[in-house]
Length: 331
Image (tube, rainbow, N blue to C red; front, side, top):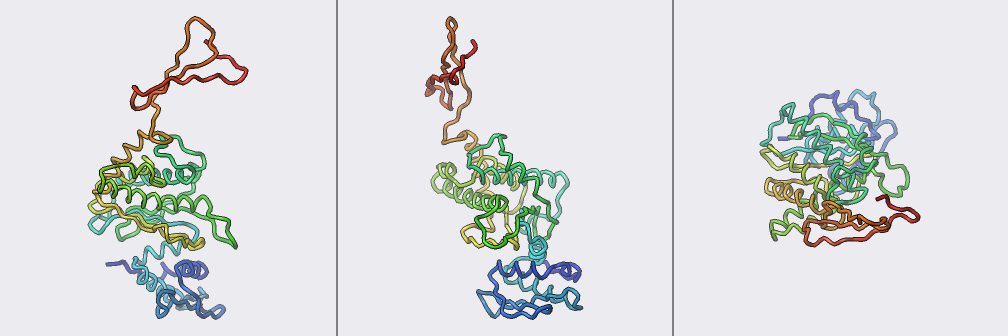
């Protein structure tokens, strides 16, 4: 049963301009407007569905009319009213909800909540790194831009309907023509593309027993796999991650999912994929475990002979490297 908001003050804070921006982003069309009074909208997929947005917050029935809009949107989108309200209240942020099915308890223990926050941070960090450059494993080496992005994330209000944690990822508004998505929106897009890619790759593993699909899965890294596994830990139901795109910057690319669900079988495969991705290194599927410098004992060193050891030391071959031009190498 979906939660209904009955407190008028909860919807009275909504601003008409932001509600209309949300409607436009969700494929509604304005049919009629009277300045200072109302703006009438119809749903493109079914023009019999209407929404009347009050434009004057001083009207005595403003909260009641906004409540009607909220109720209509919840019915059309098949989501709870608190979730719709959260999206309308944060027009300049992508709202990412991490939750589970109906069997998962709403109450979260303090220690578990702290762990969820830490793991959510790792999930977004993995997505931010992938938005810059895809690597199978980052191994603690994160770009400054990705770390800076994390500083802007906000924790959203706890919501009912099995939402364990809500993360707000601020994005700048869309003003006029755009030359492309800002980095903040690129991270959210990359996150959900990577979630979908990880799910698909896990399905391929189940069908073929080969983990090759993970090597080429867009945006999927060892860190993202481990974050998903940690988020799903102790959940009775599948892990569900959804996104409400910022109304002030509409997102219309339908190829990017807004909801991805992971059952326990898929999560188990993804966790194993994380362990394997750690061994693939930064490029391709070869990993350099250590370097061996072979230095002559009885003559000046003008060249370095470096032996690179991969996963199979039998295949290692010496590589001769010249020092930088004009420089010698101290013995």
